Amino acid sequence: VIVSGYASRTAREVMADALHRALSMPLAERINRWQALLEGVRRDDIAAYIAHRLPGAGEVIVDSLFRISGGASRETYRLRLRYRAADGAAVERKLILRRDPPASLIDTQREIEFSAYRAFHGSAGPVPEMLWLEEDPSHLDYPFFIAEEIAGFEAAPGAISTEPYVRHREAYGLRKWN
Image (cartoon, rainbow, N blue to C red; front, side):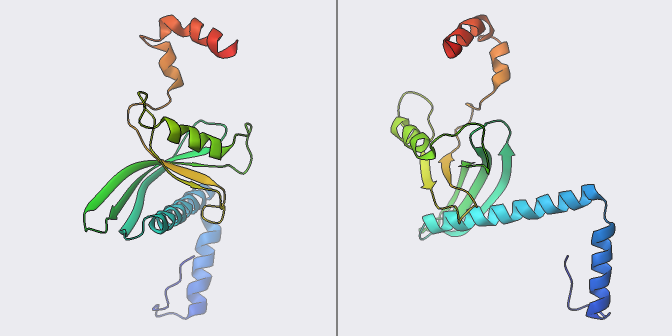
């Protein structure tokens, strides 16, 4: 509820109208407004964390933040980071944030995942650069890590049903489950 102190009506009337509007608002609209507010807070929290990790960077902005569906061990988000480097150059990076969920079906060690990616970055395979591992939950409510996004290598389970993979699908299944 936002109340302007510059209204010509009394603060009590303005507050009463704002509360009435909020309480009579359709549920879908309340949910949409809440989600937009929450995403704004997350963007700001992520930007503040990254600014802390990039001393000398200015105008740190996180936008295009959205959750990537799938994954059972972490909440995964794609975002765009923009900032001004210490030398004044404009920098833009596409990043992935993987955050521990409140509860999970699969318990994995984020430090091991982070270290494994870091060890293989620069090898022959497409492995993202790992930027920051954060164990302190005070920044984003749960521990997380941030990595660069590498385009063209998104997980797409449906791809196994297309060429050239479909002819090898049975072998993949046997290899994975045996």
